Amino acid sequence: MRSRRIIWIILLIMFIVGCEPKTEQELFYKAQKKLNKMESYSCQVEIISTGNKNPEKHTMKQWFKKPNKYKLEVIGPKDSKGKMIIGNGNKAWIYHPGIEQTWMMEEFLNSEEQNMFLGYFIRNSLNSEQVKGSIEKLEKKEYIKIDTDIPGNHVYYHKERLWIDLDALEPYLLEVFDIKGEKRIEIKYSDFQYNPKLGDEMFLMTK
Image (cartoon, helix red, strand yellow):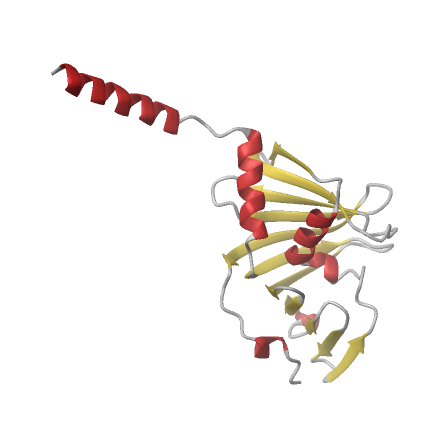
């Protein structure tokens, strides 16, 4: 009886310890580890970009495959539906269905399109010495918040902030700020999938 009671006490202690909430540092490490192991992803995004004029809102499908393959397909607004951007990190090919033409963007580095991809946020956070993580509330819910610099000292794309869902450890929101700290791009993620199988042929412009 005594040995059985000791076993139950040990199991109870293990259960209590196992139920203890993770520390902020542990949650940050767990989220960072999952992101760093990501080889590819697919999702739908709602993007709000702010320039010198009124904010522009677009809904897109997005795919990314390491190290630098990406694809965007516009769902809305209606006049941009079907627009496609495919690239490899240095060059991008843009197809516009309205005029049925494809053209190439030579200077892709530090462009707005690059900063829309989670893969580049991960690259920036790995290369930066100024990465900060914390647990903070957004819209009355707690998220893991990660801040990092964008290399190149670009005026409009200077810092990034990623909000990660605490339970699913999936990206919820990515924000890009200019050198003055004003928000330039806001990206909300939905239907996020870690590591889907994406063939290289998916990142070829055939139009």
